[in-house]
Length: 174
Image 1 (cartoon, rainbow, N blue to C red):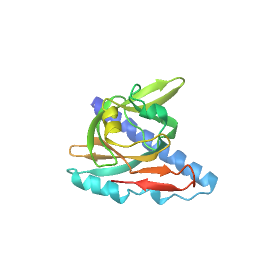
Image 2: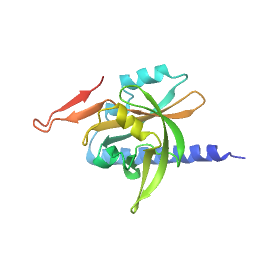
Image 3: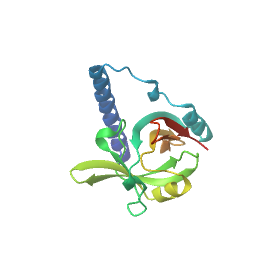
Image 4: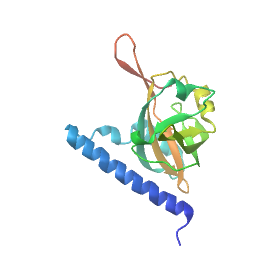
């Protein structure tokens, strides 16, 4: 008999495989090669080394932060399902490692917003905002990995902030 959580993981893995195939087809159609951005960056490997038995890093999404993502009233980070590279689960407790390598207990949920489904980080997202200097239009890349007994962990990359005057981007890491 398959446990409920095992069934969720199976569905998650199937969604990840489907997303991977769709991305590969898009890359082939557009003539772009698979970039090195799907390889875990050094900062993520350092974060994972701090965790006990961390493994299985996966790129989730490259996300430009919007005002709604930083709103204390809305208190959530939205990740539209159609932009995800790896799916999440409905309502699961996860550890989120911020760009400053601080750990936060948050909840990852699936919400319907209008006619679209999104995964949202809630239940601690305001704490993440408070500890970091996020600004509207910052770009972050979100990765997942598992540690310990398979607990899901999300990691936000160091932010890339585009200069409004020069059009150049700069990485911000403390």
